[in-house]
Amino acid sequence: MTDQQEIYGLLETRLRVLTWNIWWRYGPWERRRPAIAATLAEIDADVIALQEVWSDEATNLAAELAAELGYHHVFASGMDREGFGFGNALLSRWPIARSESTMLHESGEGRLAVFAEVDGPRGPMPVFSTHLNWKYEHSHIRQRQVTDLANFIDGMGSKTFPPILCGDFNADPASEEMRMLTGLTTCPVEGLFFHDAWGVAGGEGPGYTWDNVNPYARARFEPSRRIDYILVGDPKARGAGHVVDCRVTGNDPIDGVWPSDHHAVTAELRY
Image (cartoon, rainbow, N blue to C red; front, side, top):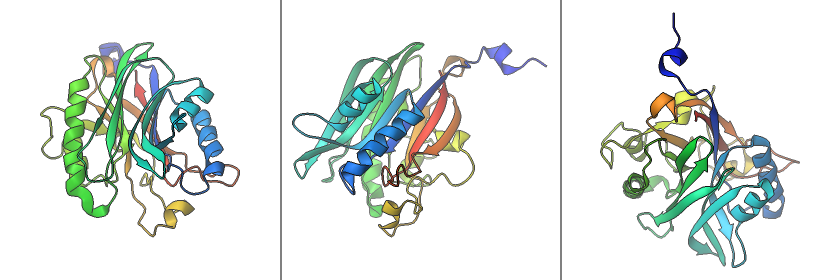
């Protein structure tokens, strides 16, 4: 029997992507900060999407982490809190050819999406980092934000690699807003849909990223849920973008400190 690699010339090289809500400056911030950096260094992802990134007049956390890792970065803030910016970022092992950001449907939370075209060694890839409204009852707002997001992604398109959409969506997989993105109901942009990396190649267990095993999450008295995602568009030629592995990461304390109230998600894609 001839295997698929012989027939289709499947890509066997990999791209490692991580997404993580790093909880702004909440909690024991000064102790969490080195735990975040150590976790990112250990996972060693090629592309990193971060949410709840702080900034001030001099710098932002994404710039600091990128400098420590030797990465490139882009950052955008959607609002100010207590004198600090609150936004999303993308970090990349490789140069960023272009970048852009857009505000999503406004409801007082300053939600936005950040785009970067990563100039990787085997061709460019479009990557997005976003963060949607957080309240349970805000599904109707998140649906409007998803519509804005889909239109933004459609405008940034790529012919050789599918879009990679990462973030904290504050929504369960069965929610209408996630179904809009994964093609299980009407898509905001016809033909634009995504595969949920955990759904394709997740390990055992529920894949919770808001998990009551984490004391910061447990203190909120909310149920454990899977609300952070790596979503990837339909694979391109030779399986480019096909998800081959997905894991919950950033889910252990370092030196007795949990890095964030969220766990991270790491996926490997054909690239």
